[in-house]
Image (cartoon, rainbow, N blue to C red):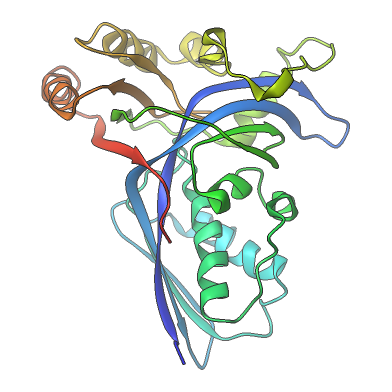
Length: 280
């Protein structure tokens, strides 16, 4: 019987993200186009005689973060926190507080791994897991998607093959704090009815950008730089930030911009990758 498994947990990119309104339960209704990129955390799960959770890697979180980590929350949500002994190691290659969904991706990877180890039977209704985190359903779905509601409504969505340049400053943004800020900028009104889940050209954009560029000149300059880069198709911020991206048709275009970027912004983290589906 299998007693150990490693699941890849990819980063996501919001090709567009619109905040429609705030609900009575405190969550926000959104509309977003999501794709996944070949930048991964790795979640290793092993049956053990005690419960151990460990982080490693370039973006290993601080102790304070660990005390409130998504892995603990997921185990509690699945009623496994006091019942099952596991050794869980998360190798962090995805920046945190970047809008790349690393926490939700880790949670989804843990759920998949626990099912493969026959510790749980995964609920195939992905909406169930939105109670744990709004982005978790789309990570469980694992394909290009149009996402609505708070993230629980996931629809198939065709997205072209792109090569992405990801760029993140040292500054990170708390998702909760960013949603609190955008709540103060929302106007009362009804949700726009998008029939047949059709995506139009005017869907592209990120509602968080207007808030961020007023408060953070570095991100404003990064976005301007990317938008003016040669062969750039799309450039904007992903999620609630602080990571920005630019999309290109060929990897060589992205690599060239990354090289020039490092000369102009030497303290930034950057990565070039391509979008794909999750194969776990």
